[in-house]
Image (cartoon, rainbow, N blue to C red; front, side):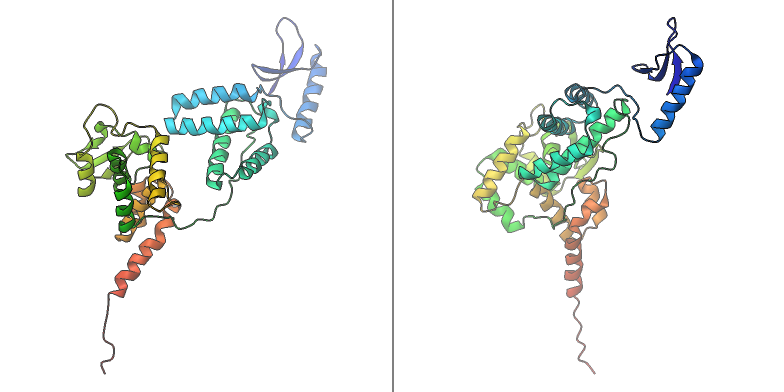
Length: 328
C-alpha cells in the first residue's frame, strides 16, 4: 500500500495493487498525504478494511478448480469439486470477501443436520480452508478468512476389521471374479480405494515383488511388498493394457458394500479392508512405524488407532512365559 499519483491526470490515490486503487479525490500532494496518514491510522485501529480485488464465489470456484485439476491428483480435485459445489449451493453467489467464519459455521451445522459423518464434514472444512487460502494467496482477500478455523472433534475409535473367518465368509458370498479379486487385493495390500483402481501393470514389479503406489492421498509415492497370497491374486488378473481393475470407484464401493451386507456385515465398508490389512500386520507383531510406512500415513497419530492391537500381541507373547514358582 502506497500513495500514488495518476500519471497525466494528477489525482492522488492509495495504491494497493494494479487492480485496486482508492481515489483520494484531490490533486494536492499535502492534502493527499494527510488523507493517506488518516487512512493508515484507521486501518491499524480496525475502523476500515483494506480494499482487495474480490470476486463472486462462482467465479472463484471455477478458477480454484481449474488450478486443482492442473496441479492436484484426480481424487483431490474431485473432493474439492464436491465441497465447493455443496458450499455454493448453500452460500449462493456471494462475494468471497463477505464470507465469514460464521457462514462456515452455518454450513457445518447444515451438513450435520443432513446426517453427514463428522469425518466427511472435516474433509469439507479442510477443502474450504485450502480454497480460501488460495484466494488469499491470489490477493482476492485482505486476510485468510479461515485461518485457525477448527475441524470437528472426533473421538478416535478402534478400527473395525475382519478376522480370517470373516474374510472367508464374505469371499464365499462374492460371485463376481473381479470383485473377489479386488476384495483380496485390498486386504493383502492395504491400498486405499482409488490407489488400487489407479494401478497399472507398470506399477507392478513382479521380479522384485513390489507395488509402486504413485501420487497417493498424501502426494507421496510408496512401495508395498507382494507376499505369496497377493502374488497369487495378481497372477490371476488378466494382463491387459491400462489399469488392473477397470471400473468406476463408485462401482467398487457399492458392490463391495452389497456383498458385505449379504454376508451379514452391514456395518462394514470397503475402507475396512484397509483397516483389516493394518490390523493383521499389527497382530503379527509389527511396529507402528512399519504399519505407518505400509499404509502411507504422514502422521504417526493416524496410525496409533492400531496401537492396542500391537499391545495385545505383546500381552499374548508375554502370557506364553510360564514358570513354576511353587518350588521351595
